[in-house]
Image 1 (tube, helix red, strand yellow):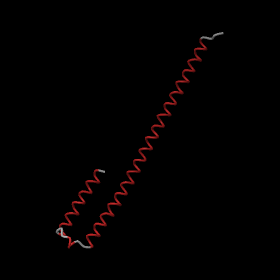
Image 2: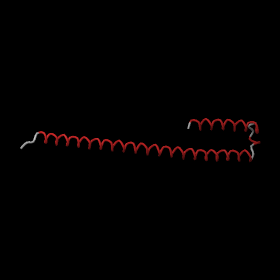
Image 3: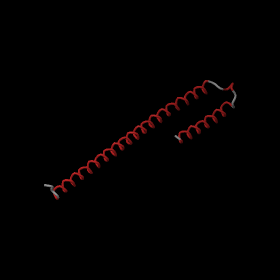
Amino acid sequence: MKSLSITGLILLAVSTLLFYLTTDFTVEKIGLPHIMGVMAGVGIGLIIGGMVGYVSKGSAIKADQKKKEFKQLQKDKEDLEKQAAEIAKREAELQAQKNNPQI
């Protein structure tokens, strides 16, 4: 995003310089080519902004999906650890019953 802002400022400076060189900042010299240039610049900016926004949104969605998958994996791991602890506890109880039968 920072590089886009810097690029935008550079292009704005170049367009201001070109405008100054072609019209000397007088309103009488502004013609149809200048208006067409402004509209083209706005159009190109909107196209580039749309593409960057689309890519950024896609990246954010992928990152969010990875976070959800990671949380799900952590939850599954905790469940498996609980099950393993429960199985180990049952096995210990069975071993204790085999070693110390109460008849």
